[in-house]
Amino acid sequence: MRGEGMKIDKPLGGDPGDLGNIHRPTIEELSNERLAGIPRFNYWVSGLLSGNDGNYYAFYLDIIVPWETYSFGVALLSGLSVEDEGFRQFHVRREIVKNTGCDRTGEKIVVWAPGDGERHRLAGDYGIYEIMEGGRYRLGMNIIDEEVPIHLELECSSSGMPFWYNRGRAATIFPNGIRIAGIEEVCSASGYIVFGGKRVELRGFTDHEHFYNEVDAPEGNILDGIARYGGEYWMPFYSEGVHGIFVTFDKYLDGGIILGDQGEYLIPTDLEIKVLKRYKGYDFPTEVQVLADTDKGLLQITHRAIGLLYGNETISKVSGTFKYEDGGAIEIVDGFGWIEHITPPEQGDFIHAVLEKSYPEVFRYRVKRIQKARG
Image 1 (tube, rainbow, N blue to C red):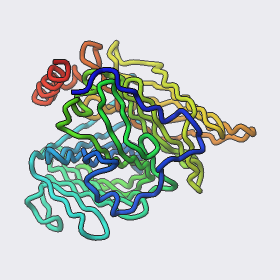
Image 2: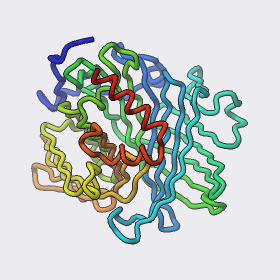
Image 3: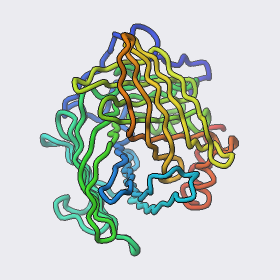
Image 4: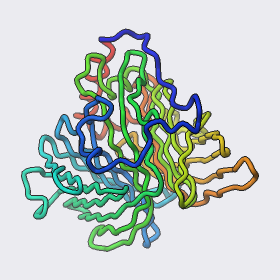
């Protein structure tokens, strides 16, 4: 195991015009099981969508490659703040363990579960995820719930470059030497959900993650590092004029902003995340402001939580502005966002309270990993 003196990478420093290895990845690159020498950890996609019934729908899908696990969840949200009396939520989650299928041999990557079924004949609880050339994705999810059967179909597409961690290079993010690499692609999304027999048309955003981290590294994996050091924020956002993502792990800060129809990619020169409100004393943010300075202007956005999905995933609406240096501005009035925030349990964060009550098996696993990380 490495010591505690490893140098943390600083992708937000240096020349903001130097994009490093940031580029549009080919399907061959996305099919590789390693990036910058680091093995693949997962495929992840999540999103927030507005329905033509006046409600919001949030979902996530997580395929952890080394463990062959596949979990997904869907929530129905009213769109009100989680602190309002009218806030309501329906939430259902499924987890399929040691049973995933993947085909990387054609012109697209297809991942599905249960993996022992033919991907064209899936039935019952299932998910299928397609990754195509040029920042295009397709998702299908089916949940047979006794109360509310759910079927979700989405088409997603991006504009501009995806975000690459550490400007497209491997990143050391914790003092003990844990390294990561990866790509995040924020997309516009449209489709429909059949919720309890009623079809609802959807529009909104999705984030598509290709994350690389060695699960059995001597210094620990990404989950061990977060459990030990905390300070994790993962915050994609989307509006028609500007979208992007900001990520922190303890003292590691990273982010990318994509402007306009042409998809101009900006690397922040400075980043500040301010938690304005928390939920009932827990370290569960319900209102978060992000200030990101660039050589083209200043982005100021505020996430306001409208829901919670599986403990530490906060669903948010986003508003704010991007103010150009020359005086112009892009207004963000009806944006979509997501806040993933995990801290060590002694800091009293909401995720541990939720997990202990609702998902005791996951909570016990997490505590075990925290104990291992701290020796």
